[in-house]
Image 1 (cartoon, rainbow, N blue to C red):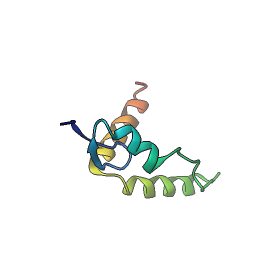
Image 2: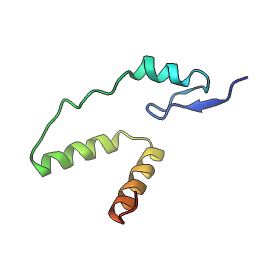
Image 3: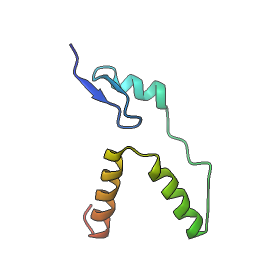
Length: 74
């Protein structure tokens, strides 16, 4: 039996052997966002809105990456 893994995009559980197909079929190519702003306040609202939709695990990953970026790591 194939190992079960979570899709790193949507979190759906699928077999490891099917994961690449799932990503291609379910998520396709990422398109550029339909929003654009030159205003920092608006950009912040968009970021907060997107962050709120993330799972707790993804939120931890975002905080870690932001912390590393702030510290000049990676």
